[in-house]
Amino acid sequence: MLVRFSVCVLACLVLSPLHAAEKAPDLGYDYQAMFLSHMKLVADGKGDEAVKVLETNMVNADILNADLKENLKKKFALMYVAGGKLINHEVVGYKRFTSRVYRFTAVSHYERALAVYTFTLVKTVSGEWKISNYSVTDGLDELEKVTPYIPIGRPQD
Image 1 (cartoon, rainbow, N blue to C red):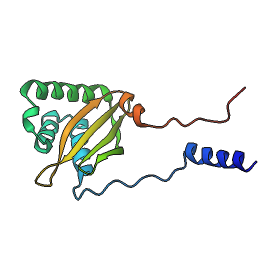
Image 2 (image 1 turned 90 degrees about the horizontal axis):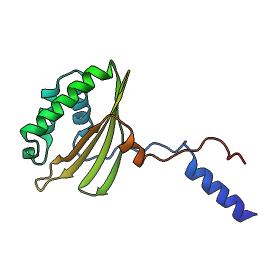
Image 3 (image 1 turned 45 degrees about the vertical axis):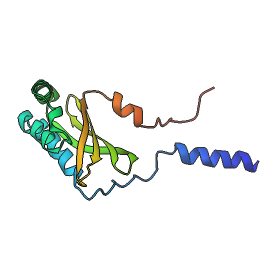
Image 4 (image 1 turned 180 degrees about the vertical axis):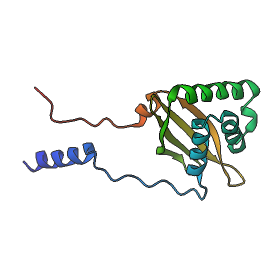
């Protein structure tokens, strides 16, 4: 009986949606401000400036060649036109791979769409945090991979 109770309590704790939210890691750098600034520029239709924010914060700015910059600007313009009014932005979570590599996920909510951003930050030799990898999608696929499924109610037999 005690074993069954312990398993039940453990399952309830693991599956409970009432876990306390984790604090954002302190990297000694206001990465959230950079993310939110970039996302706001996209939402305001300022694709050129949004690309410049990425370029300035990339570990290797040469990654953003002319074709990639142009593709990002087009994607940002489409998001601006198709998404409608911006509701809010939020940095929703992170994954720590090593002491020098973190991946953050952020979401912009619009009235007709959402945008999921992924920023991978690496600590450089000089101690700066820079973006090594970046993506933006219009779906939840990336976020769904890292978000636990929370069942509702008891199974129906």
